[in-house]
Length: 165
Image (cartoon, rainbow, N blue to C red):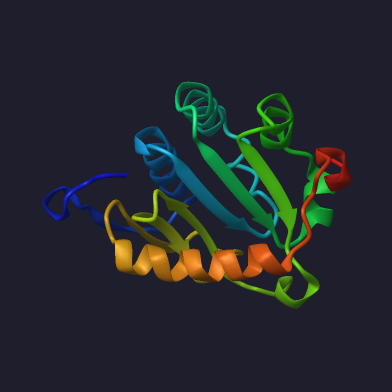
């Protein structure tokens, strides 16, 4: 996301619709990389048709697009199912899932990072209150560092069926 600071927009989120709009908007303007840390691929966000269409467009139109997803509570994904996992099976070279290592399963935050600059952040994944910012590289990189730490500690789901979704 190559927004200049003058194009930056920061706003407060207080509902599922606002979080969804922020995530879809950022996917639509992403040029290459997305990192998602979610407790359970929040139904209403990561199974929404607008989100799925935007991710599909990104992965099919950008040859080096990469979407990495960490799931803190994979048993909830198993119970609820998620069309995002089905999409990942079709474009498996671009979308990768990992179950968060046991050490990070109780992590309360949820966040979405686009191109190391844009961020949707919720301090408590069980609530919809949070912030979104289209260009805050320092903060986005801080959370991307946490994401990478958890990513490296977590085992790769080489087969999407290991998510048992």
